[in-house]
Each structure stands twice: as C-alpha cells, then as structure tokens.
Image 1: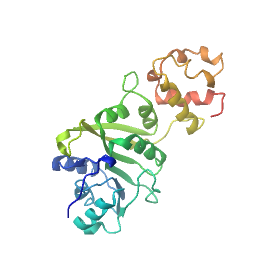
Image 2: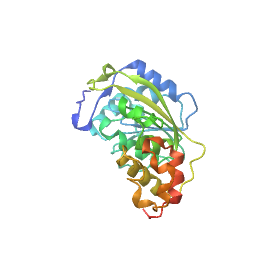
Image 3: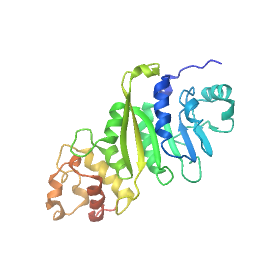
Image 4: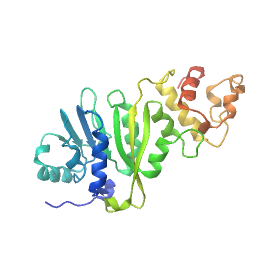
Length: 254
C-alpha cells in the first residue's frame, strides 16, 4: 500500500532505524503503563515503540491516509489509532501516560503548550523538534537561547537534550537539524499566585527581552516595587523560581 507525503502537514518521516532504536531505548529506561505517540505518520517509530510492554498504547494521527496505511501495515493497531488533530483532541487516557513523537515542526511549540496543559497526567515526554527549538526549551538562564519556552517548561519539567538527528534520517530530508529531548516531571512545582499570572508575566518579560524588566513589567508593579534591583535585570537573567515569586507581588489582575 502506497502513501503520499503532504507538505501542508509538515510531514518529514523518520526512516533511520538507529534513531528509532535510540528512542525506543530511552523509553524503556522505566516501566510504562500507558503511552501515546503523536503523529506516527507511516509508522517508522511506531514499529519499535508499540512493541514496548505497556497496558495500553494509542497513536494520534491527523492524516486519514496515514491512518489507513498504519492499519494495513500494522493490523495490531486496530482500535489504537485516533484520527484527529493532536492540538484539538481530548486527553487520550485517564491516569498517567508517556507522550512520544517526531513532532511536525510547524506545530511543535503548540505541542509543548499542550503537554504543559496535560502535565498532571504526563510524567514523561520524549520528543523530536527542530534542533534550534529543542535547544531553546533546554536552555539555561543567562543565555541567548533562554526564553519563554525554557522558563514555562522548566517550571514543571526537568529537560534533557538527548541527541542530534541529522536531516538524512528523514524522508524528505528537512532543511534543518533536529534534536531529541526528554521532559521528566518535577516532584514539586514552584509556588506561584496563579499559573495564568506566571505565564503572562513570563511572556511580557520576554516580549522586550533586551530591556530591563522595569520596562515591560511596569504595568504590573508599583513605582516603589520597581526600585527593587531585580527589575534592573533582563528576562534572560531570571530563573523560573524568580518569575514564580514575582507573581505574588503583582498588583494588576491578569
């Protein structure tokens, strides 16, 4: 059975067996009860990960043609495929589940926000991103790559950059390098006035990342508060704990 590649869906299918085996090995480092693959495409990675012993496996694929191809190639996936847009789908399991995928680059940032939305049920995420995005998520304070994604993700997860994936590992080869990263949920989250305030504060701070924080954050703090030395720093100099602590001092409701 043949299938077509759809540029509109950002399809670059993983074809490198060694990369698939490396991802499988990462996933097998701990026991998994439930697992969800995002965007299995033609099933190169699915072939390896759906064999990992779990109580339940599901895969979410938007492309109906690829769902038919997967069912034809792997009949054992019957009843395990969700033919929906991952960004629109309901949470696929009750209880905890591991999330894995070679994520379409055009929605990879939105996928991170979806994982954060589901964080209480997703203890582990292993995902492939454009290398630049993967490095940004894993970046530490005081670096140029450290930004909104770094802060919001690292407030809830320990992020590890696992390995590079070259363009030759895909069909068709993308124009960029890829990178595999792992999220491991923290045992406790930072105290914050509200998650809404935290997200808003971080986004506002990095909206003018070259300026001292007293400029972008002026609407949320009093003139007296803005005298605090922390506001002479730039957004990239603050840890997620710093941002979380600032939410308690904000005087404007978000």
